[in-house]
Length: 401
Image 1 (cartoon, rainbow, N blue to C red):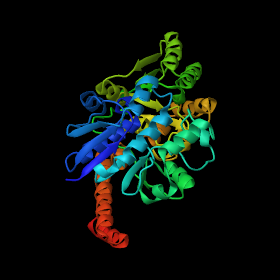
Image 2: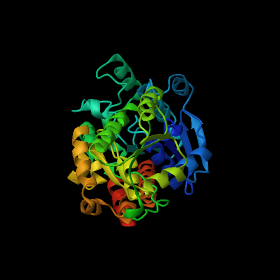
Image 3: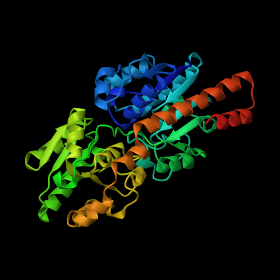
Image 4: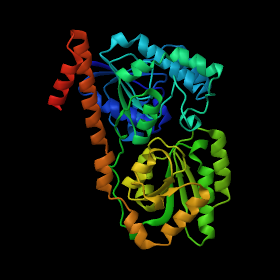
C-alpha cells in the first residue's frame, strides 16, 4: 500500500469541491493508506450522509496551526491566504507520503503530485476575465495577493510537471491559458444512483435550484425570473435548496421568500428530500455565472428535470449546448423559459435520459478514473526514484491501461 495524502481545505463546506474530495477519499481508501491534510476536523458521519459516500478508513492531519487558526477565526475572509498556507504545509511534508493529491485547485507542490482543478488560482500570471474565475477576495497586484503568492510557492515548471485534472473543458482551457499546459478533463462525480425520475406528466410544474446560498449563486435574480414567469400566466413555484454560506445574503433571500408563497427557501435538507424535490419537478434553474462545471446542474438533469443555466463557463457540457436552455441575462432567461414552458413537445425534446447522465458524469466512472490516475502517478514517482527514464514509464503505463 502506498501512503497517499489528499489535500483539501474544509470538508464541512459541503460544496462541489467537497463532493469531489469525498469521492477521491472513498476511491483510494481501499488500496492505499490515505491521510487527509486539512484545516478543519471533518465529521465523516455527517459528510457520508450528506454526500451518500462511505469514507471510513482515512486518517486526518491538520495543516499546522496558523492556517487552521485563520480559518476558525475569519472563515472565508482570508481564503486565499489559507490556501497558500495549506500549500506550503503540504510541500514541506511531501516526503512523508508517496503521493500528494490536491482536490483544492493548484498548489505549490513539486513534481509527483496529482492536482484536481475546479478553477485556477492563477498564482503566477494574469488572465483575461480574471474577475470571473479568481476568488473574489483577491485584488489583482495587491500586497495581499503578492504575499499569498510568495507563501504558496507555485511555480509554472512544477505545475507543468504535475498530473493535472480539470472538471470541465472550459476550466481546462483556462488552466492552459494560465500555465501553458492542458489538464486531462475528469468530470466531477454525480450521485445518480438515488434518482428515480417520475413520469413527466406526474411531475410538478415547478423549479428547483441546488447549491450553497451565497451571493454568487444569484438566487434573488432567480426569484425575479420566477416572478416574471408567473406574470406571464405560468402557475409555477420555486424550491431553493442548499447550505448557507453567507448569512446576510440568506436573509435577503428569506425576505423575498416571505412575501411570495410560491417561493420555498428550504436551505440544507436531508439527501432524501433533495432527491425527492428534483425527481418530482419538471424544471431546474442555476444562477451562477462562469460556473466551472456545475455539479448541481448535473444532479438536476440526473433527476430528470430540465435545467436552465447561464450561457458561460463549463455548464454547456451538461445541457449539450442547447440554446433553449442557455440564457445571457435574467430577461433572456424569462424569454427562453417562457418558450419552453409553453411548448410541451419542446420539453420532450430537451429532456436528457438519466442513463446518459450516469454514463458521462456518474460516480463509478469518476472513481475508476481517479484510481487509474493515482496508479499511474505512483508508477512515475517510483520510476523517478529508481532512475527509470520517464519515456519508458509512459510506455509501461500505456500498456497497462
